[in-house]
Length: 529
Image (cartoon, rainbow, N blue to C red; front, side, top):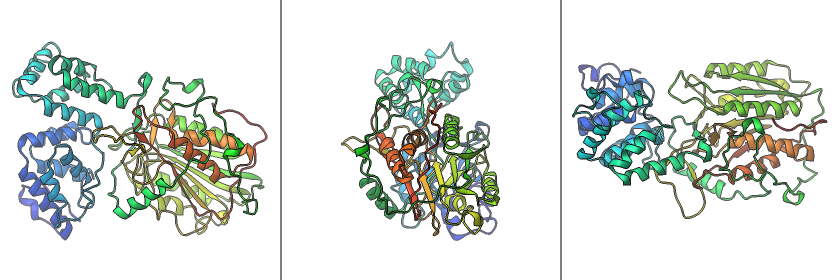
């Protein structure tokens, strides 16, 4: 299928094209014709984290910007969520209605992605609140900082922001200069910057990040099912602390962890002994494959700071449990699938089970390779099916996925909601309800429920993986089965929050296990590093 060229060019109707594509291009043309030149520059500024500044420097119309976004797979008739988000930020409600009209039903107008960073939205919000006289005063204050050429009278505030970023005077983690200027010009706007910094940073300056990809709009029925699933989740055990050793201490106390918390036996309902257990008496426990994706510089996604902490914790715990640990670093889509095929090609006859841990960015459909390409959850799981690996027949195949399942922030359950400008935290990927193939002996433990983000502290690792490792170390020696351990992880993570107390996370295991998974207690115990 051919993509269209610039909407205003003679090539607009060239080449074969599907009916939906043509309708989408017509909608884009309506949007383009409704935007002023200033509004086009607003769009360009908001997209400056998604496209290169070199490409954006040539954009003079909305049509050119749309073509760039389509070329980079950021915009399509199947997924117009980025454009909807941009129009929402700019409060272009009439244009949103065009995109979600009866004539074009490709998306749910109530579901928006969060691909524009909270930082970029903050700068846009400030620019909308600055009058012409305030802009002149800001330029005067910057006279000794930026060149006079960059401060000529036609320069907009958004252009000034970009120039300040080029001079390293402004950034997501560098708002000091801007705050001082705004405080002198408009003290009421300074409060907005302070609010952003308070919400964005934890004590000690530790950033909690969000790993997000493009979100596939959720159907109302799926959201209803998930809301019910989260609503019936009850706390069954006391919370475990999530403390770390000296090597990872960052001074971040936002999790309110209690280093002296313990698990009381009465908090755990031990499983019915009549339920059978998978045999764990083989010559070896099995292989644990860890796919650790950090470097996403080859695509538009951000690097995953803190993921190496998760990787090391997983290595220590699964070696302690008797697994042979293999680590694959920074894998593309093809490399992820090839790594799993190599794992499936092994003879697992003497092994009890197999484990695969994936640490990456993600979305509803699956997890991202470092090339920005998706591996669906079905592809991930079916690689180790008995059809491809007969030696794993009737043996547990355990997947632990640290990835976002969407871009929505899960709110705390009390009468207080997050504003739409709140920053999102790092998330990986989520799995659809039908992602587990119809075969037995699978466990897919996801870091969050569908359509929501999961959180990663750059100096401590992710909430989910760190709680999983700690819970395994504490509960395996007590003979607790894996699903009960994951219930403990649910309890632990559900009690965590950011400093504002508004963002929450709920992990979710999905399984087709037919027996209990109980790891034998290791002979020697050692703490996590």
